[in-house]
Image (cartoon, rainbow, N blue to C red):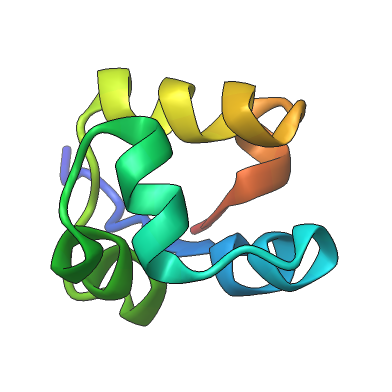
Length: 71
């Protein structure tokens, strides 16, 4: 039985725009680098569960509202 590959995208850029916050400011609030936020937004890096939860909590959203999973 083969496992299906999941495609995970995110809404970080949109959520940042709604809150009018820069990558740098978000990074400082969450405790990561701006490069980390940039890489997550571009889909180059998938955050850990802990970081994903921290981002969702910061925006007052459920994880599923920040990160979109497609099969």
